[in-house]
Image (spheres, rainbow, N blue to C red):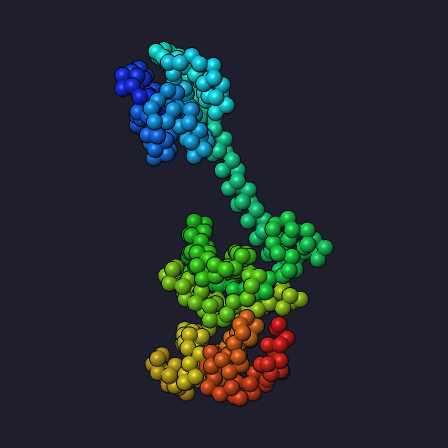
Length: 397
């Protein structure tokens, strides 16, 4: 049972002691936390203990009870106040009424009358607490339902199950930006681990929260992000682009936090092609899961070291304790692309993100993504994208 905290304030010890001993406070779920001899001490103790009920004499030294009550009411507006005074003064009574005191008692205090007031005060406090608990629960449920509605709507939207005429109204109702998201990060559990860990709802929610925590820490400046759960996938849609290296950091931190293998892919979105990109990314991650451990480890190595201009296939093969020829053959066989093509794709993808989201010069971008030569970078970029890095940057402005 909750203990309502009580403060007795009176400059006479015999009065304070009499009030304390005249009532069995625990019968009312109350506890006398402290006693005060003057108004200033009453304020100090009331705020220190965050009291719920104040029994206070009006006529006290240093600061009178009325002034003390005003100060306490400012800091503890829900505190219930009972005035106890030897002065049957109508002016004091008027001021006490303005402060919304529970009652006004004359000395000597009648124990039966005090108990009657305490019963009423306890009922009011409990009713107030029940109202607050109800509002808190209702607010939490509304927020939970709202989040579920956001996820359901968004999944229907990106999977193409909604007409465009339905989208605008739903975006406004669910407090989402009117413009489409600019990017997303899709995460998938490793096979086996996904089957095991996603069976239990509690585990799934715990893992989702871990991912949210990582994202909140890394991308605190992102005002809008929405999490979509779809069986073995979790996708985070963003309304502000992030750098490719941040996406890699997210994957590494999620894996570290969950202590299991997570695979992810970061995509910059074409607003007219969101549904296709979403479905293609799911397919790519599913295909990736079927790769051999050797090729997966090779891709992870490339993702982690692509910014190193001196990275070679020989270095990857040595780290995996296989021959360069065998690794090259396995990469080509499973991915349909050569090591150089994969590395170039990864570097140019990161370069496009930097060109879109930073003020770095072309030379600086080239260096950030692993190219010693700006000329070689520009040549590779134009061959892959169809325009120069400068033109691409200008288009992104």
